[in-house]
Length: 164
Ligand code: S3P
Image (cartoon, rainbow, N blue to C red):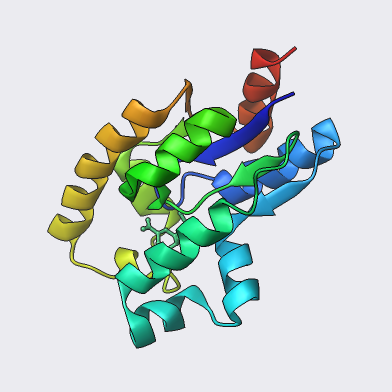
């Protein structure tokens, strides 16, 4: 099986679904956000705060390119699609699955979230980011899975069915 890349906005469930798929399919799971924190020994929030978003994007691209093994499940950060080189890389090396979630649902899920620097902007900025990103996700995706009103189990089953 090709490596599966999960993309989507913050709070769309990439990490949770990635972990569940990995357990179900017995394939290794890599989360690029966790990998950035491990490799650079800092939380994402402190990378943003100390060095800015541009530096985070450089780190993110670097770790993505270290995940090129076959047969992996890779959960990406919501902004992975900001760099053309990243989407090119994912399209060349695997199958890209977009977990599509509405803004209203994301807002519910991340209501109390303080850990994501780009979710601490005002409502209008978050909406603008969401609308811009949606186009990038759609352009990069091989498959789109809608997640609103579905359980994580249903989403995982739907992804699994694409490949059996
Ligand atoms: C980001 C999403 C985050 C993390 C960072 C930037 C983004 O990952 O990579 O805070 O630009 O959308 P999640 O999508 O896992 O929250």
